Image (cartoon, rainbow, N blue to C red; front, side):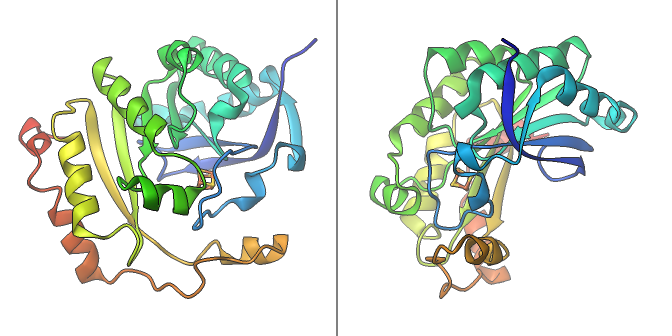
Length: 246
Ligand code: SF4
């Protein structure tokens, strides 16, 4: 039987999910329920808009190869890409055969020996550590933090290039203890090439409304520029800065 993937959508010229210009594949399915999720319509596998085989998807990606010259390539995001591990592995493998740079954007929640195998075909991981406080993490995502930290440690151990992502939510993830703990956790990780502290915003609200789900953070404000500067200051002290981030 032909391997097919349940897909949410494609974006042909993404510029924020990895280096250069990227073809983004949004996979369907996610075990997390982040309170600030921008894509709640990716949560349930059965809500997939498309089901496509590998050759269909790789042919779409290949059309954009000329745009990938300056370090761009394929980014697989979601949802949580590793929910559909077989499809993601096959797609990454085909992309590598075509000489395309590969990025996976993940929460790190699914972490097991299969993921370790698949990482062989991943050039860069975008890992979102949503909080370093297990209680806040559980409240924010509905799942436990432990796997994500193990995932990060494994990436460091195998020296897999990684961008760290962390959304700064006022009153939830902007606390000094949390940011200090995160900074300390990554301080010896030489595989980290970039740290992205992203300001929380309300732009995904309409999707929650369209799905008829109440948006739990509707009363929260976005962080100010000053607060973002303050949050970033915790990461100026880390050892990784001495290692010249690219
Ligand atoms: S991991 Fe990503 S897709 Fe899944 S709920 Fe969280 S923000 Fe949404």
